[in-house]
Amino acid sequence: MANQGGEGARREGRVRSGWMEASAGQGPEGVAAVRDRLAELRQLSCDEISALPTATQFDVDVDGARRRLIVWHERSKTSEEWVIVQLYTRGFLGVFRRLHGEGFAVDREGRQRALTAQEVNEFTW
Image (cartoon, rainbow, N blue to C red; front, side, top):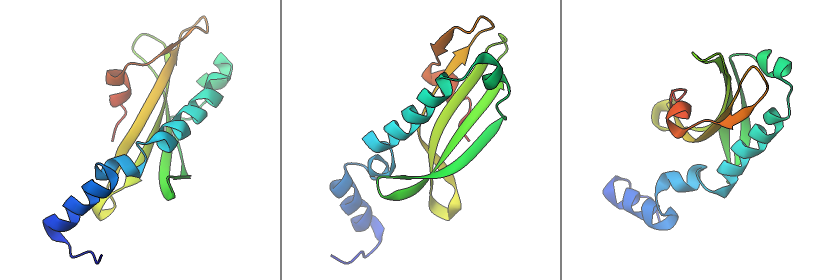
C-alpha cells in the first residue's frame, strides 16, 4: 500500500506497530541494548566510573534501524557517581527523542543502586 501521508499514514503506522515509537527501539531490542551496556558499566571499579567522561555516544543497530546510545556520567548533589544509559532515535527534522533509559548510582563505598525514573529523566535532552 502506498504511503499517502496525512492522518491515514499515521493511523496505518499505529495499526502496524501498535504505536509508532514502540517499533523504534522501545521494544525488547532497545531495552536490551541499554541494559547490556549498563551491565558492562556496572562491572567497572569506582575509580573507572569516576574517570568516565561526562557523555559518550555511539550508534547501534536496534530493531533493524540505526539508533544513538548515550552514556551520561555525573557526580550528584549527594556525592554519588551517576551513570545513565539512554537510547535515542532521530526524529522529524533531525531532532533526537529518547526511547529508553536506565541508570545506577555508586556511593563512596562502592555500593550501587538503580536510579529512579525521575533521576534518569534529568538527563533527557
